[in-house]
Amino acid sequence: MHRFVTSSLRLRSAREQLSRCHVRYFSRLHEHVTSLSDNEEESIHNVPTIPPFEYSPPRYTGPKAEEIARKRKEFLSPSMFCFYKKPLNIVHGKMQYLFDENGRRYLDGFGGIATVNCGHCHPDVVRAIINQTTNIQHSTILYLNHAIADFAEALASKMPGDLKVVFFTNSGTEANELAMMIARLYTGCQDIISLRNAYHGNAAGTMGATAMCNWKFNVVQSGVHHAQNPDPYRGAFGLDGEKYAKDVEDLIRFGTSGQVAGFIFEAIQGVGGIVELAPNYMTSVHSTVKKAGGLVIADEVQCGFARTGSNFWGFQNHDIVPDIVTMAKGIGNGIPLGAVVTTPEIAKVLTRRNYFNTFGGNPVSTAAGHAVLKVIEKEKLQENAHIVGSYLKERLNSLKDKHAIIGDVRGRGLLLGVELVTDRGLKTPAIAEVLEVMDSMKDMGVLIGKGGFYGNVFRITPPLCFNKQDADFLVDVMDYSMSKL
Image 1 (cartoon, rainbow, N blue to C red):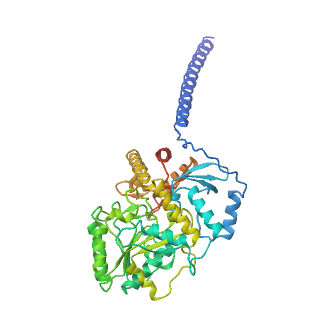
Image 2: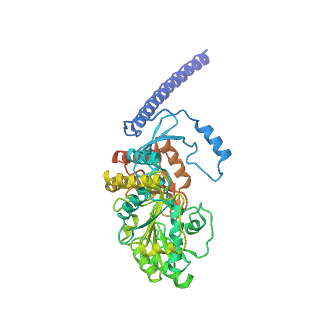
Image 3: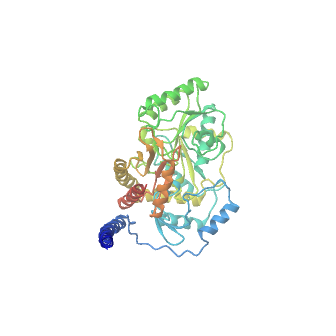
């Protein structure tokens, strides 16, 4: 009996202890869940929201993304690729915003470099295209038309020195091919020097000059030489531009006959990862190339037309005047258009034979290009690129202080790059993380590009109508997405 009572008392005591444990456990669990809910609620409140925009796109009734992807896979080149794991079906654009098939709005942080300078479907540019299309669409070669002459005059007025003769093309590739041909004909030399990590186009000659951009074909071109890239972040000599320039001098001295046809460069390398050339590099190279009888070709396809903010053309930030300037992309705000501008003396070389371009400089394209120039002036977009771009770069640099994955922030105006690395000391490219952050930003309503030799650099190149509110949203979304890593 005594044993039974003792056992009962022990059992009751154990039950009471277990009960108290349960109470404490569930009490703590409740506190944890409440805390978690509070944190989730706080997190939801901290999610950046897209700035207001008083515009509603027209209702889309076309095929959905899945159907388009199926047709694309079956009928288009397998070399074509899309951004994002789940590609977007973009059906409408208005200024700095894009809209998908469901009417969802996205801030376009990349389209400015692709084609659009003034903003998607800018009414002035659209009006110019429609007005010209209703009159005549094509009369470039054999007849007179004021559209091509008016735009050529306006374009020449934006150029320094004696750069006043314009040849129109359909793309940047065509423009750079023509520029290199002019340099070779004018100098009587075949050797062209370009930079490693550069990007100049998709034809055989321009692919040869494109050099070491790792996702391009290695098209070997006779007479093309690739100089060491004056990259302040990853280059061997840091910010010492004159040491990089010595490589150009050596290429001319030991790799050629001592003469060179031309040197082609981007003031800021776009596809290569928004790489600014080291200070004093171009002044030294310009002098070296001219002494060797060559022409200096400025590829302004990505950094021209006020994008760098401080100047209308990227080469002006290097205090030189090139012999030939090429341009495309933003020149027509989405219309296929490119141009080569040079001096009257150099331009005469094309009269030795018959040079023409069937569609280059057609009235519709040149009307669009002229409208773009007028919008840039009227809306002070160069000033806006400088003000908003400087603000955006400052905010991106503040993210660098917060997130160790950001190795470098660079660029000018609204041509900015953010390089991601897993180790700042070793500068190890954060390739997978770039894709993860891009997808996260897309889901939150921000579209940006990527580039660089390793594909680990965010390319931030929005339309020039971008404002500070847009800049804040982009940076806040990037911050939020990186925090989730």
